[in-house]
Image (cartoon, rainbow, N blue to C red; front, side, top):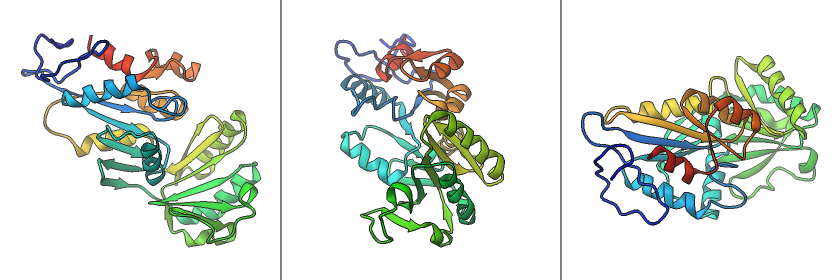
Length: 287
């Protein structure tokens, strides 16, 4: 029996400790869409828990969709998912909403004009940024300075390349710049300054000591809205989000959001709903 209604079309047996969750029947039928942050949410420590894996698998087998929304770039994130041996998802929204995939199918990429890099990267350097990484589709450019000062152009491996700060004009457009400012207060101030100076072209999100900079208007909730537009039609959808940090707050407030209990106390308080892991969240949704 489904915990939402008296009937259930999932046709599955659930093991001990698993909570059944399924698309319900009748005129009010709908599917769940769960969009999860990755670092600190789906992955805690160095791996994804067996409990979360089992819950997500049951959730998807019941006709629902599970996806990950992350600040990481697509190609690097695929390597990370391969490392943790996880492929149980329907969609990926990367670069904080700038890049959208349904399975392996590209849905949309958003770009910033490359000319802003010629002042943005020096700005990052001037505030003590430990590095500056520029995502262009599948390629990850690392600016040559600071901890990468001993690198030369051509040193990169695979999708990773190094670029001199005097050659930034070679990049015509990009999906995201990410950097680390060193401490959280400075990172928050730097993100605010980027939004003030470059708001016509860019949006900056601080996440601890890291700052992700994407095209203006791009964000995790905007990326999720865009994904929902691609799959509109069919059964009504109940959209649930879960995350742990500042760059997740928008999607947690706009949709039915749950903060990780282990996440930022400010986020937990602001959202008002929390869970210890995804398995717990899915179990609560089925009650």
